[in-house]
Length: 198
Length: 198
Image (cartoon, rainbow over all chains, first blue to last red; front, side, top):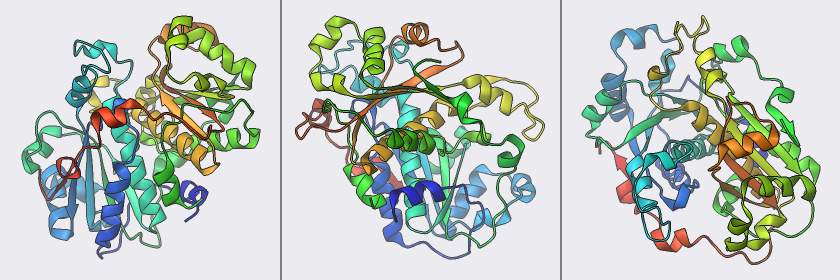
């Protein structure tokens, strides 16, 4: 698909058909995630991939209590046959920047103006979302509020933090858009973009 | 350009020709930035755009001391005719999630597992980088280590933090790649991607 069409069509999709996704597309999503940029080429990220209904079900069982699932407004989200959890690893950035060619001789976190471990992992997640659109699929990205439960369920080491989880599948023809789009509305470009100075 | 070609060709470019970039491409980069996803559609981001040599020069003068510029290994980076500073605004996220439809009645930062203000702004930055590739241009993304100087020089309010600056231009035929690519190397996919469990 043309790049600009992918950008234009990308949106969060929360209703999936109950059928699998071609494994080759999953591989492409993961390869593209690893082509995201990263500070000092640290690549301090990790991806937990759950493929097929049985594996995907384990994600919901581990992290979404029954009540939350019952009350969720998009029941067909749980049909998603692919789940990719995108995780960041701060330690790998601190280690990278203590290497001789970077020359930060300590691992002081205060040197970092913003957490590039989370930002770079977010960029990798965006590459996955865009790749899903390019493949004619739908995807949604959401936060993980109980990191400990996730780590325990899937044996994830303590030094990884989930930046967000992506559910991917074939989109149902009708999907209720997020109420946020209407409740908030798009910010006026004039308040967002500043030319020459603020 | 085909989406997959854009992903494949994206890399940091630090050597630019001394000629302007079409204003329509700058507009497209900014429009695509604002199509990035954001938590609760908060869109807590801002973009400072410096177009043309005179404006771009003000960026380097304000934030890169003469010695740093002199010692920098890619002198043609300073030819970039377009600079876009990507900034995040945490307050706009805290305010968004205190709205009735989100129902977090306080603005407690501890509720957030990761800083989506920085992550979403990073995704917007990636859309800019990819759009540059799609337009046949080159771009580089780098961190801002003196936020106070940047704010002072361009009248940026205190509640905005620069996640990174993008310099864009027509790439020179030869550009020295970042030494990080060789010094670190690509991480083995088997240590990054985990199927079923970690």
